[in-house]
Length: 145
Image (cartoon, rainbow, N blue to C red; front, side, top):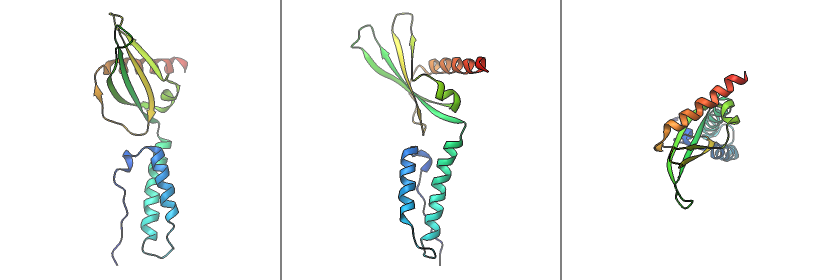
């Protein structure tokens, strides 16, 4: 008999919550020992569990930075960038969820920060503001030690 392979393409691109739900669904399949699907289902569950554990043990996380530009009046506000950076987990957990970069003409870029499971597509501009912000966060960490 030929060996059966069960595979879910792109498990690395799944959000952690979605992977947990998927793992629970695969666990519920519970094929009988010795049946044709027993080993493939167990192997699929192992792959999902390995991906979840890798994310949990990782020293790095993905940070999502979304920039909003605020103009001269309060009605001018639009998204001008969405960028992702790999950040040390301990730094990311201590970072504020928001920061603002003020330009010389009194306009600002407001950045919302959150930790995400998967890197998305970088869009827009003003990436150097993120790099400056992260450099300050890392220097703050070093000064604490």
